[in-house]
Length: 460
Image (cartoon, rainbow, N blue to C red; front, side, top):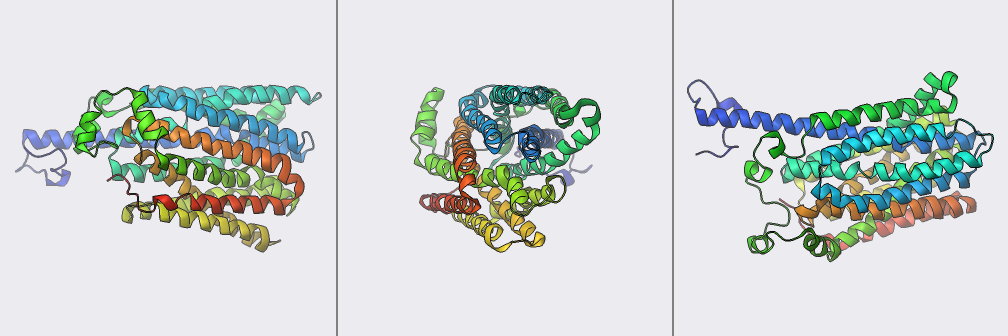
């Protein structure tokens, strides 16, 4: 009997048609259809998460520009979001290893839309600025928690539906969803304000992102399945004759049958030195990424005197569009030709770090140079994608989401402490020179964290 993947669609003709290869043809077609449905739904879902994730960055920047809130108030509200989001990614990650990711992702989007609406309502009256600041801080706890149900369920879908090589390709392509969402968010949020401000005032900033998030959350719950078996299809292992991550060694596999989840967590996450090297690198890369993301608009306004609603938002978006283009081109090429990713990631980190030098020292008043270096800085999204892939593949398939959660909490420690506190509360007051020196130092240290993994292979 031929294996499921031995019979190709074009080979089937009237002469060769049998019950067996017809079954294989139909099965392959159904598997492909479900895989595409899962992938593009998950892609759109995470892109839409960023419509509400970036709400405070855009809205808060505008409040600062209008003199309604101070830099400290802006960074404190953002700090709460970052801390809760990072901790919640770690706390909620085991849910993704053991519960329905369809429901986690769908309810996450619905909740993100509802809480985003409430954040808008908190700014209807700014006569006493302390009131909306307190309300926003409380809501950021809820927003941070609900947003933790975004990335980790998305990644788990890839490990439930795709084999190793295609999963990495899908992961790389999916990774640009947040670049697209982030780049589009400023236009959507400001566009929403333009459409609804006359009727709803400040709330106009929040209407479109919130409505889109709620509607798509319902769509996620309705149209995708957690794993092939839920769609009446063979399991991933059976369909691809696949050895799952952590089960390559048959002796180890046999000795680990029916072990509790805690066993895999301790062995493949807690005691796994590579996870911790990657976690520190991820923390430092998040510091660089969020340093640009949180303070880029402010830098363009203060240093280059760009209008946030016009020139500023276009140059700022180059950072995300750079992430989209370089991740797709270089990321897919790396997955095709490389079996080890540490040296490649180090090179990408160093390019992103050098681009910061360009933004700081070389761009000056040149809009073209500034946009170019912002575009190049986007290559830091490549190691952020591959660090997660490496962590997953150096762990075990039963703790994929948990290993992602460890990187997540470290990443948002970099966001919360490094970007929001060290930069936002201290270095921003010292001067932009101090900010750039700090970010460049983070990039250089992150690169060195990958040296121990130079000879470590990815799953095949």
